[in-house]
Length: 242
Image (cartoon, rainbow, N blue to C red):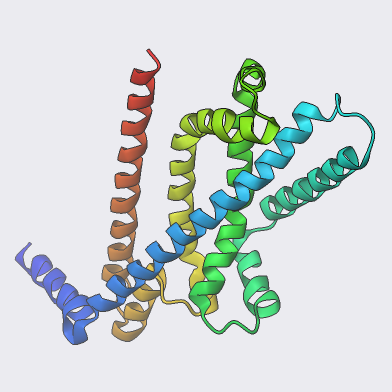
């Protein structure tokens, strides 16, 4: 037993203490967090726009009079549906490689490419989350907004979207959790994220156990923390609805 503990100690020193190799994990975690939260912000912006277009189409297209406005809305809805279908249908690692080697080939900063790629990817999923939340809001809320003198845009901005946002917050936090884990593939474009940092340590010490399980433990701790926040938020929302 003591020999096993001694070997574990030697492994820890070799992988994390010598040459300050722990910095690879710290720097990688920093890059992972930056990419995750920046991409989520981009995803929320894109998702809100796409969801607004799609929900507006679904709610109003049947009652709109033929004209330029109806045509523009149908075109925008088609573009948004195509975007969601393509992004959700192609693996994110393939999207990342296409973005790095083809679309953003002039961008030398892999972190920026990662943020843009995961932001665009997240936008498709957030759009469906927002659309579900908007469509779930009682139609009477739209009529109430109109009775207050608001136009359609104002009603969506001040009444419908805030109510939808309240109900989709747990789903958005779950998207954050998924995004945090998905960024593990950003090492494909030479970004030194948490996973890549662990792999660099493994390549230099030829000892895979400690760095890989260390990275896995860090991912697990953060996911458990985010999950705790989701659970607490869901309980608070249930309490406020009583």
